[in-house]
Image 1 (cartoon, rainbow, N blue to C red):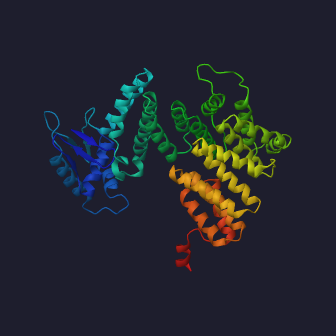
Image 2: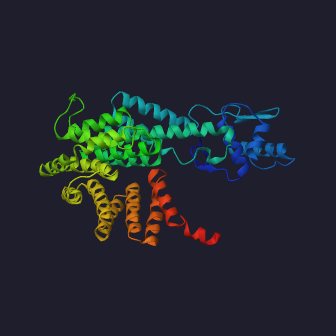
Image 3: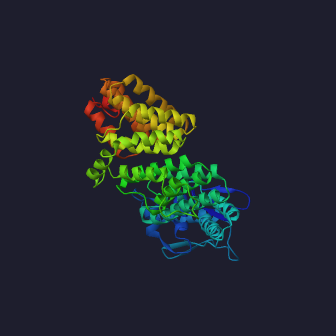
Length: 448
């Protein structure tokens, strides 16, 4: 038999899975399994079974009844058949190796990790998919008290490890679409877990999707800088440099030259525009602003769309800090058109959003709305909630600049429903406050 604790607590027997429906016996079983093969005092059992409530005078007698019910439910163990043992004021449940699904999860994870280490990705994939199938929700179904949360946290971390190793195995077996889907799920759940951004970049790279890999690096950097104020670590930076230089990992160049190196330099300078070296970085851009137009047009002439929009994105950061790039709006329009022609959806999304901001700055609100609407459509089709939220904030800013206060407020609210907490969400909330608009109109109406 098997005790299933990776979700609702269940007893997996030879014929069927039993679910203990009464709350208190189920909480008692959960506690005994958390401390399997160890004695648990009646006082701790009472605290857990009546968590947050005052136990009745008959609590200890009731515990005895629940133990009797569990003994009738559980199949016997070994020769003596004693699955739950008792002594004065304490009980323990006897669990053998492999009878907990959490033990099986850990064993399968170890086997999958060993196979990956040995370079056997197909075998690793088999073990890790089996491990993932054991997970059914929150371990112990929330039945244990705060005192036992470390075990729940440990199992949650094991689940993370299973999915991360599974992503490695999917990449190793060239199942890139599945790897991308899994890695995107992981980065959405925890955008500050940098190793999973690296996995997503590798999945795109190995699938031959260089532009998507570079775009992912930019999204990772935005998350890390926005939330933690730190640049990506060495692994992510090395992947970006490899992609920009387009050199296989086993034959790196120490100092790449040409357009890739130039774009990388500009990206790094743009990254410093909001840091401690902001003044120096802005001066660097200002002294070179004329060359950027030529550089972008040269990249477009060579059909190097990915580098063209990456460079445009870096220049946008300069423009947003008050900088000037000659013929900025027409230049961005040309890059957006090239990205569309090259079927580079993320490049088109980024540049249409930038173009909308440029048009807003010059008062061409109708044209700006068209660009933002196009960007929103791309983000929606590809289910990129962060990008959609960011574009909505820019669209709201455009409407506010044109005096459309109510429309701007609605766009800000839509953006906040999509965005994770961070600088852009904070900007949207501040703008709503400046407009004198509540974040939740329905709640504000009730309050009044």
